[in-house]
Length: 396
Image 1 (tube, rainbow, N blue to C red):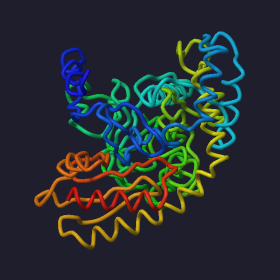
Image 2: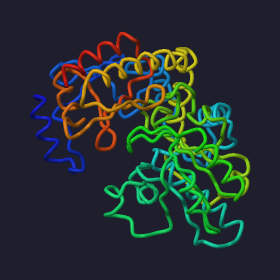
Image 3: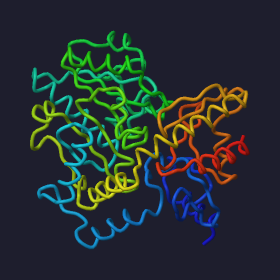
């Protein structure tokens, strides 16, 4: 079957919730992807920050194959060695205390919000609690995750006016103005992704942490896109010397296997969810948690964090050069290998460039309406950056 015939069949049978690009990807190797016609693409999207290890990592693949032959799934009525090992390792690298495994980032957000509400309910027996989230945030597309997503385009068709208020990101006073005696949680991405690549400012995130401590409000940090090494530390909050009460992870924690988690500190673990409050059929099964363990093994073996710190500095320099060179680019922002360049969209749009880039064998994505986003596998080299810049210039 030709690639176009396959795409036509997909249009016939798949629900049209995506405006997909007209290519069908077939295989990957390292930081390259190949479509069904054999065309090569340099991948600077990594499945939206998922494939941190790149494609075809043999030790990762072998670990998954071995676990398939051993035990693919068992319910959470029972313990399994991969799940316990993965939980222990995530606790150790996060500085938090307990883990609940999920199937996705959206489910991790759902569980985190649920734990925060249960914590507040345990304190006063009320259910009319409020959450503060942020404009331009993105936390997922399930109804609960949408309720705290600060983008009206995503939220409006599904979420009625409810108990979520939206503050201005990096504006502490706007947060304080929304806090009242019903506020049970503040949820934020440590680095906003979909909303336009906005890292938290140090005074802001420290101020939010202090406010939560003062008012006994649960701080939830969404590290689904910016966590697991993407910024050069395992979690982006490590840059600021703060810890959340609850952190959410997914994407790169499984490097392609659908798995996520929310992690709680001891206070929340002991005073929120109890047996019967929350559950999952697939979450944390032996296969999914084997993926987590294999990912963490490769992070250590390949010195992923060191590579991110080294190559991201080079990437920032090259992107800054582009901003200085082209009049339709107005700035760069980001942290580590989570970068964005901002367009003057009256002159050129990032969406145009993404389409051109595909023709030139480069995979990129946008963020917000005016940002071109760079989320490469964390194994990239400076040579890969040079190749990307060449293809990107041709795409301009």
